[in-house]
Amino acid sequence: MKLLEQIFEIAKKEPDLIVLAEREQKFTYRQLFAAVSHISEQINERNLNQRPILIFGKNDFITLAAMLATNLTGHAYIPVDAHTPFERTEMIKSAAKPAAVLTTVELSADFEALFTDRISLELTDQILTDKLPALDFSKAVSGNDSNYIIYTSGTTGVPKGVEVSHDNIVTFTNWMNNDFMKIENNQILSQALYSFDLSIFSLYPSLTTGGTLISLSRDETTNFKLLFERLNKTVINTWISTPSFVDICLLDPSFTEKEHPQLVQFIFCGEELTKKTAEKLLTAFPSATIYNTYGPTEATGAISSVKITKELLTENDRVPIGFAKPGVDLKIMDKEIIIVGDSVAKGYFENPEKTEQAFFTVDGKPAYHTGDAGSISADGMLRYQGRIDFQVKFNGFRIELQDIEANIQNLKEIEKAVVLPKTNDQHKVTALIAYLETEKTFEDRAAERAFTKELKAELSKTIMDYMMPTKFVYLKKFPLNQNGKVDRKALAQKERGDN
Ligand code: AMP
Image (tube, rainbow, N blue to C red; front, side, top):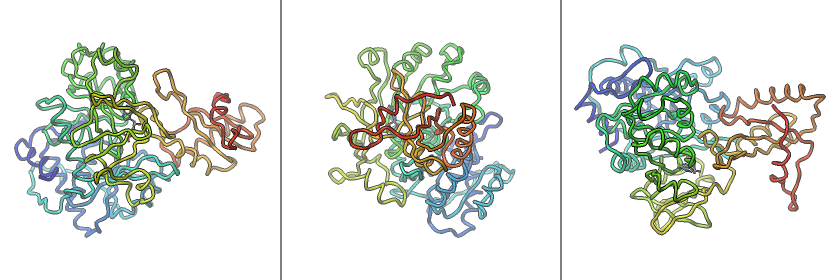
């Protein structure tokens, strides 16, 4: 059965169940499919080619409905968050050449000009009708058809689109629904942006089991006061986030089992779960079941998991990343973790060169070079030991340092750029330092700060806000090592300045 049909079955059986709760408004499964039907009619009217559809929006009901409607009409969707800078959005649009663009937010003039032929969606009464429509699933994506394409940081400074199939999502969803705690009317935190693959941990498992997505807006995730207020008046059973996000929530003294007795399951992915965070969480929620899971967007959500216990933390210096999910084989080749099996995505959308570098086959099965260093013990437990390249996780966000470097190097007066992470004793990146080679001289620190401000303003047009370096250090010449390459170790010693 197609994933969408599976979700529709829930809507037929229990149409009044709440599918998604925003701060101000709740929506039922019936309303979801009314909206899906309405939006799919608008897509069908256009007689589009079969290319994917770009969806520019936020994390909310209407954007979710747009994603499902896109799949119903046989198209893959490309979720692009409405906070993506203009020039980066332009790069994604020109790489993807979408059949159409759906927008679910108000647009500024430059975005209006970029999306001239868009289908603009709003929550109207027509969309929110309370009638469960009859739907035709014959054109809906299935099998190896692409379900979505998520654009992620690329080493050349241009994002690359990970193309994930309908069957990739099905194997992931089945695993989540079977191997983790089963909860009736599960209230699942939906915090990750739809443009990140962590969002699928919430979306598909919830939709296929009649759960409710507790949807946090960007306002709430970026404003601690609003966040703590919302959490304190909302029932959540299953928590899904990066460890960085739960670290913020743990700052609120009321984020405890006593205040949140219904919060019984935590699932983490996306970056290293540090021992410190795991210990704090076990203290705050001693009876909850906590999972660490691991996987890249290129292998659809996650491919391994492990339950976190006090014993596991005592026995390990770093929190292990778990045992492979069914359908996946893990291998270590030259210290690198290789993922083999049905979770491996189709590749990078219309980018054969990058696809060939990272995707290959092992015994006829799809395989992916993760770029993660790791080891597997005899019992099958996978352990993460850092990256073998220049990709980092900063505040839970995936960043290729070369992406930032390439975009800085495009700016005037900058010869070369190297961005280096600063890490703490828990292996967590705490800052990104940009070293810039430039002829420019500064009269005083105020002049340097003013230049940095201009640079940041320019840079923010092409990189996501979470990629912005914490500090900029200017040098006349980069130190070189014996091979004549930029000496990164020596650079790291040169950190100074306070901009
Ligand atoms: P993303 O594609 O954004 O999910 O990022 C994938 C990368 O995040 C992986 O290749 C790892 O480097 C890192 N990652 C994901 N989960 C974990 C984990 N549980 N522990 C350590 N690193 C992780």
